[in-house]
Amino acid sequence: MKTKSKFKALPREDQDWIFRLCQNNTFEKAVEILEKPRPEGLALKTSYSAVRRFYLEYNPDAQQAQILDQYAQGLRIQHQSIGGNFDSAILVQVQSRILDALAKGKPIADLQVEMKTMINLQKTFIATEKWRADAGDKAIEDRVHFIETCARAGKQDFKSAIPGDDTPFVEESRPEFVEEDITDEDIARLDKAISAGDTNAVANFYAVEGFPIELIKERRKLHQRGGCPVASPARTPGTATNLRQEDTPESDNSIVPFDPEKSSGDRRQQPALAANIHQKSPVKPHYPPKSTSSGNAKLDPFHNENQEGL
Image (cartoon, rainbow, N blue to C red):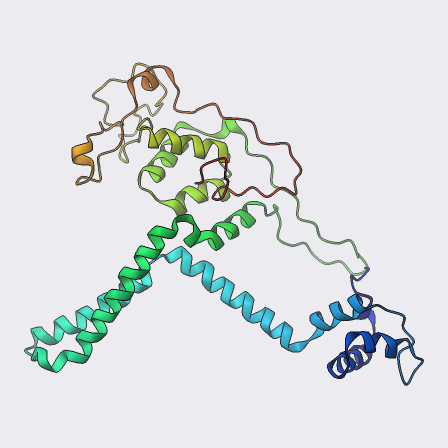
């Protein structure tokens, strides 16, 4: 198998020698020395950029920094996934200990340090929650990028290595998502996640389940216009779940009428389907076909100037 860097094909002793050479000389000077015959050099004709690439990749400190970057990136993605759960949990723990101490009769004057700690945590929690709300999708962009990367993953993560087989491993693309595979129950689950404002769940419909991004964006637009029906979470087995029937009775609990005055106080209130859409438009909308542009173009559902994000 061909290596990308010819320096990596050199014996380990020569690699160590080149690295020490670069540690004590400029890259330009190292190029001149490498061209000289052994033992003064290695009798290698090379260039500034080639020596620089090798040095940056071979440098143990740079490699250690790369390892730490991988570690930190994993934590960052996980931190964005959990939102403010850690901050809230820490604050609750401190408040609980203060309350427990007061319940046991400890004077509040003896809890000044704990009270100050609680107040500082509250200020930090409020500031973080405000930043998260103001930042919107920006606050979870690393996790979104990770989800998109997973969505482009192949069907296999590895294959058995056979001695003598130098064929590089290439991930096979997953089969294209077939529109006909989407059921009414799938649409209902998507609408429920959109209505609940669960960004992570909505993103998973695209990244994990393979829902077309055009469909998700259209369902979001319908919801924002108050025309996206939400299926009831509980249904009697055997009850028809086809939300596209035009003769759905008005008393069907699958659609909850939307009342602006009650929606703020009752989370169960959901936008009802507008009358004209309810009578003439199916729940499963027609959406544009997938783009046939080059596969190198990155599809970013959260940061598109011309389309709304997830």
